[in-house]
Amino acid sequence: MTPSLTRPVPRWLHIWAIVSVAVTFLLLAIGQFVTSFGAGMADPVWPTEPWYVFHTATDAEKAKFREQFGFFIEHTHRIVGWMVGGLVTVLTLGALWTEPRKVLRGMALVGAIVLLASYGEFHRAMMAQRDTLAADVAWPIREATTTGIGLAAMLWATLTSLLLRSQGAGWRLCAAIALMAVMVQGLLGGFRVKLNELVGTDLAAFHGVFAQVVLGLLVSLAVLSARPGAQPQTESVRRWARGSAIFAALIFVQIILGAWVRHFPTPLSQRLHFLTAFLATAVAVWLLVAIFADAAARARGGWIAWGLAGLIVVQLYLGVEAWMARFGQYVLPELVPVTPAGGAIRSLHALVGSGVWAAALALSLRLWQTAPETVHTLKMMTVEWAESRSEVVVPSV
Image (cartoon, rainbow, N blue to C red; front, side, top):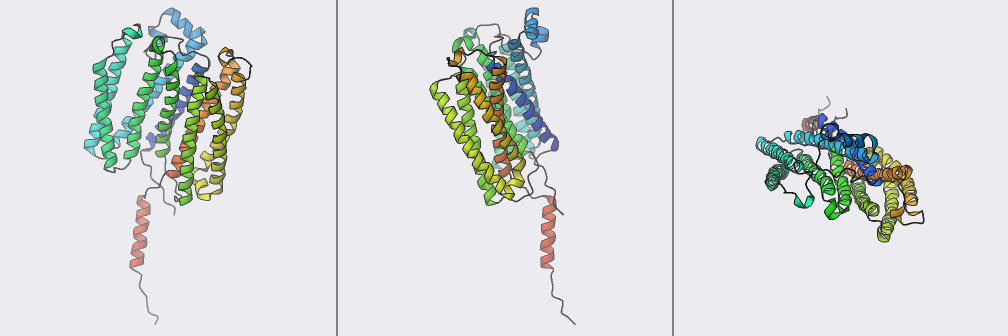
């Protein structure tokens, strides 16, 4: 009888984590369209409520939402961002609730609630000044301080749980960091709009790269909340797990270079992005061939490896098309007109790159994940030990 491996967290949290990843990919897709079509400043007003263009906006702004593509995708991006924030909030609160020690559970939950409430007050104070010039904004220091206190309490409780080796402590810490990262990402997006007149579009690149950090955290939560594989973790599996981690880090560097090319297309950024693509492809081929040749590794993460292989093939094609559309026109990149086809290809290229990053990270985590001993396994070990102790030699008559 094969033992059924237990989940490290309740099943609903695993499903919620998967939904959070899916909606985050939707947010990334819309965000890539915002960048490709230059819609980052379609509406210079920030912060706004999710229902801004439906209830509080003027008739002219509502007409823009219906008729102007840039205004539509910019506000759709903001609305989906609110959805991701809500999903990650529930995910984190659910994760903190699984803390077995009551004192640490209460500390973590109180800290998270203070963090969320103070962040809301900070957002409300900024919303009251959304028509104020950036240089004249009075930053809500008190709300920011209270937010920091709530964050410190939540992280202290989760870190203490990790030091005490509580079951699932690492997963809860990752969930707490994911909530913090989503908040920071929301502020980066808002400051990109609010501070445009002071710092220009520089924050857009940081906003895009940090989105990949948020995606990585949510993918980690989805993978580590799944049932671990029943196959043993051999030395070869650990080797390919390390290889997958190196490949994931390389893809993240490639994403940073891609953001550099999209926002600051210098000759150096183009060359580095192009050369790193060759290196990443070579490492991917070596890694995937090795995993497919190893039965234990293939049993643990074979389906992720197949998905990663497919994404890489698609990404190479989109990369060539995006490169030709941007840099193959014999004119300066900034003078190339944005066409629907060109914008769609560049957006898809960036989005599939996020998929490659997510798949590489998921593969590494899946190969690293160890199977905890289950009740059934412990019972079987106890029975086997008892049987070995009770063996006697019966003399023949």
